[in-house]
Image 1 (cartoon, one colour):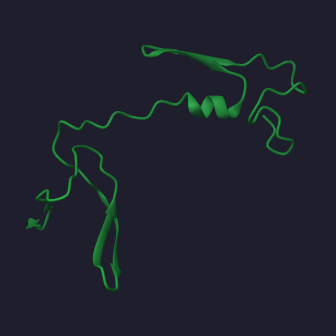
Image 2 (tube, helix red, strand yellow; image 1 turned 30 degrees about the vertical axis):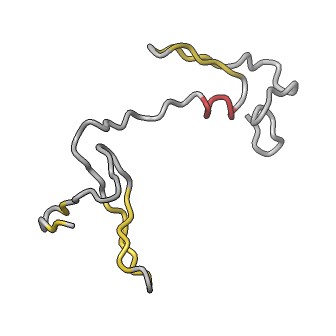
Length: 95
């Protein structure tokens, strides 16, 4: 891969005939390709169990005028829907 010249980034390059491509086998099936974008597209996202309790680690808290306090984070497990009662740990504060 050459980011400087763009070889094998978005499409297979004729300037690297020695590179035959890559392949990976996993239980979901096989994946193969010749360029970086195909390798990135072949990455499987991690499973996020929606049947477990809500876990949302906070990354930051913003205070936005006219809106209020906005906690920001990523849902690791569970599902967050409008109207859901949320308990913040370790303070045990309920919304």
